[in-house]
Image: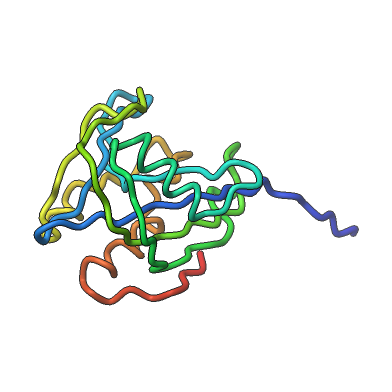
Length: 158
């Protein structure tokens, strides 16, 4: 029996924990099934773009806020959505940052922004269908859960 190698597409993304008065800023987006998804500001890195640069660009696009003084919090990496058409190798960075400006998203997928008290964030996270959406995978939220509890680790293997 031969061993076939496989090449997975790489998904690189960066998100930022924007904190104000014990609250975390979440982005509200409408999913394909019509439901609202709450996520962290940030998103995919472009080819050749650092994760830090992606975080700055995506936060501005999704929230209207300018971020500076990025501080690395954690990295989550590994195979994600194995066995689905969206199977990939994920490298997701999480940062904190200073921010300024007014909430004014320019991303058409963003339907709202919400400051959420730390203790209420996990109640807004929806897991489950559609199964091929990484944002609904509970593993993606483990670093955020730990951050909110004041116990972040630097590295999260999937």
